[in-house]
Length: 414
Image 1 (cartoon, helix red, strand yellow):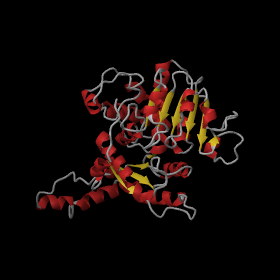
Image 2: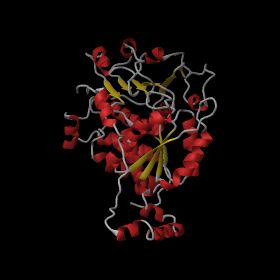
Image 3: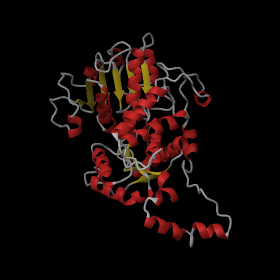
């Protein structure tokens, strides 16, 4: 599949005026409609909700609306660019919610939530989200730097009775686990025996390590900007300490030797030819940094032209896109369908399992073939389903909804 040529002029034109807008779901045609929609009729709905708070889900937009909340401290691979510069990404998330799962979503970029040292003020973010939560059926936390994001998600889940999901933590981890499972099936390798290198020990990297360890992976080396997470380091937070290694490897170059899988959630162009060639036979390279992968896919093709390998990125213009778009719209849809109070680990695993299975279905809808102008067959160039596969919405959301019911967090049956 040829790389898509993205011109800055086309990108600016597409974003001109923003990517989302408010659509009214009911028409105002006459005086009666106005009297029903606003005063005096609307007062009756207010009284109903006051008497029965659960009525808010069926007679307002709450039950199908998500807040996409950010402070702009960890946007894509761009880093701390602030709440205003984060808005195009948040609009993009809302666009994906609506396009792929028919869920309404709205950006909520937060300002004035920072400490004097520039770090996120955890308490301010929590207080702000709690105050705005009545309007929303769920909270999608986005692009908030670690380790603050871990505490914010945990505390909001304790306080609120609606699903709270930090997409950068769990969305990436869910898709990565699905891709890893299918890589193992294609190559015949075993999760407990392979060597995995994770470059990037922020929100995504930590949760990827958590999920693949739960799946059975044992030999995992994580790297941050200072090198490998090893027992000799004395500068690691509690989340990184969970994933330290006793090996003598000090940096990414050391870690990549004899690795089977590279998982990159860090920054662009950190992998070299020597690192790639030092990996084991039939490697997987998941270079997911956005917008610039850890290595240019064309270089991987050049370096491994005579060898078997599997390559994935986080971008939409290459095959095997390991991107949160395959998770968050459908996880929230499943949660909203049964009015779940939270998103549990079993719900996340159910989503990952569904993605892994769907990729192996030999039937590929024509709409997918047309969207990507290619054929699809489970294998090295089709590791996980594509975002345009219409089956994903029902397939994943149903699995998530069933898991919510099993876990006892659903307030409504299917």
